[in-house]
Image 1 (cartoon, rainbow, N blue to C red):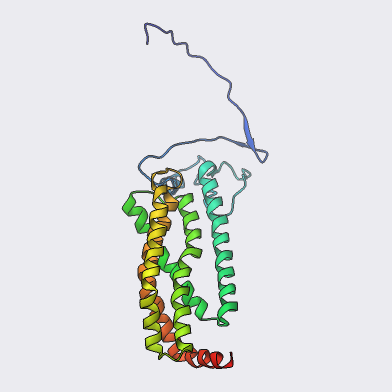
Image 2 (cartoon, rainbow, N blue to C red; image 1 turned 90 degrees about the vertical axis):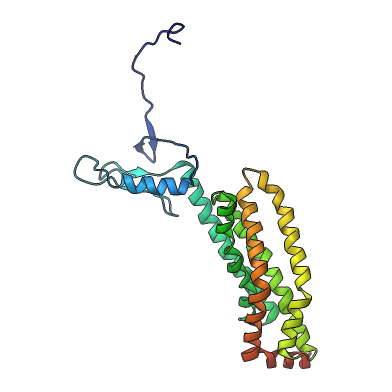
Length: 260
């Protein structure tokens, strides 16, 4: 290249950038073979130990759910922006959406069952689904991303269905005069095949997204969340329902059936 070109060194004017009336300098980087979250938080800890020149440590911010505004009255500061800030904002919004969806699901189930405890038993499948999300990302060698969080929100409505099938059948058997133990056992046994087939349909239907770089995280969350939720639901939900009805609800359900 030196035989074909001539290198001339010269000064170039630098752009003056502002944000919220404050002078800023942007530094960008790409991360390979690591999660951006891990790299940013590790780098943030290292930067906080730097002396900015006046005996004060360099202040860093903007790694929380609430965005921080530039404020250089006390000197320079480092604010994380770009994709990292966008990811945190999306996580915050999706977390709020997940909270509202859980509240709506609970209220709907309270109105349907006329009980405050049975909806909680049905929704116990949701944390059981979360058990498989992070190990699933580890198994697949992928990082938890924005799309993964979307998959977690989608799981909230998907996995509750299996619990409702078991609970409805158990209550119907109780109203027909079955003993409590037999009612719960029959409900779990009869609904086992449909629950497994439905879970397999979700897994195989979602697996097509594993080849997509954008939606791979969402597919991993849904697939592994559905698998763990299904395996635990067919065991945990019948046990919780049996314990609750044995202590509190069996007489109420039977008397409700007689009034109908």
